[in-house]
Length: 270
Image 1 (cartoon, helix red, strand yellow):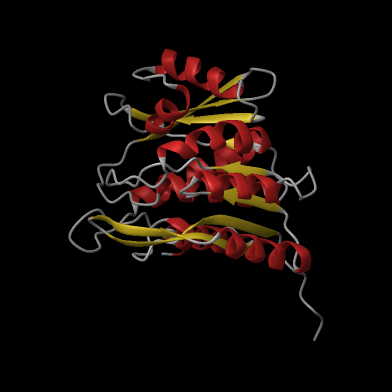
Image 2 (cartoon, rainbow, N blue to C red; image 1 turned 60 degrees about the vertical axis):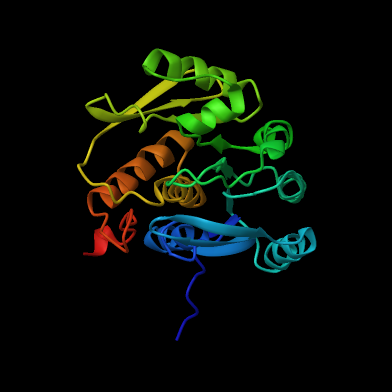
């Protein structure tokens, strides 16, 4: 039998979700759904379920570094997605590790700061390291409106303010900024704004679905973008495809436990 060709390799650097809806678990499911080979560097372990995050424990820096080197030095990496980084030390370490990769490898930064239930996942003192060390290495950064406020200090209540926030984030060094407007609940559609290196704006709109089971949307979107970039898409095409995928996952999100259930990462196979 001929040897099969290996698929593109995508590395997630993030925390785990013991409930399986977000974090590393959502990332790997999303990567599988896109036909890429998902790999992981675990940064933190959470005790988490459908009603919230009960606790979390950051991993030692050495453990994160050795996971990264084991993967990067042997298997190789075609794209990176970062998620929960928890502490300033972990954020700085991950930025340094990403800096050892070929600059052509795309990096998608999901600046995770709170869970879907409002539980903090990023220490306040880590925000500066996120701004100054990690964002300048990002090909795409994907904040929601709460994360925009945390990073820039700007409150976003409408599309005009989304533009101002995207430009403020661009000034911190990422090549592309995707401001997610899903929290603008007074809007009839879910609207996101992508701003590129030349300042051009791309507005992406999708229907809202009346479904409360949306756990893992941020992780899923960022992982889908990283997967599409590894497959060869340019950034606008990758973002469009990722938004289509996560919109379908939200529509198919299902109840699990007593609280907020996850998006359905396998909705295309149902």
